[in-house]
Image (cartoon, rainbow, N blue to C red):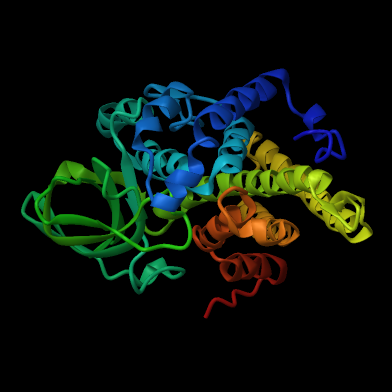
Length: 386
């Protein structure tokens, strides 16, 4: 945060190591992402060439310890997510899918053999993973998934469909969640397995510098060693989703901050009625409201991060952060776009791109409605999902 956005000296709450990491990731975003993101977004290109750069920065599986992973703290991971999303949500999403979903599934639920086989390669960016949970008819209600894995001798055979699966068309392995006779189980599926097909979804109005796919699984036969031995029931994927949701709490504030700083700079230079746009009362009110929400969102993210580091994080904490910060960030980005006038609809300026991306971020890993009901259940003790 800079002096115009950090109204409460939030930076003073970070350690020198945390600030050093922030500066390193910010420098990567400024040097590699910002000069290219408008082209990547317009052309709907995911820049796979930067995967190795991200690995060298220690961004892949960065909160995991051992197995070649960086072993950084929860707050450090959050800071990195925020800086990446200040560049673009789609590129932060890559880090989330790789580390918080695919790698976390193996780390939390895999055997030692699976961890040793895959995690070092994934942390190095040599293997890309995806996470197949959502289906065409099972989004907010994954318990209704139709994908089914049956035992056939010493093998498993999977049939089904998945949708909106990030990275699937470039991944070497997929974590596929399927119903079995014993409930939901997770499987490590090499994407070159016969019967596995991933097709990118397009055209999209959001997350254009990212990849989301449909997956079809037709008689996909796997060895018994492909199953994640410690994942049984929906708790398995949900534990991974909470890792990804945590990163979103920080990331959304990155998009909001970038939009705010863009419009602060613009409003100081743009002349209207013989004075800078920033000199008008209505402009200042809008900027103040944006800055207030960014500061509150940052404090919320940091508190949740410290709870996570202390081992005190609970699911409803995640819902507070994801619901609030996504909701406020998207409003900040929309307001910033409006303040840019006609210029705001071009890719010369970031707010509308951020706002479009946040439509996806707001939807995935739990919609506003789902997180509202999680919090409603926590407050009242009455589940109202059905």
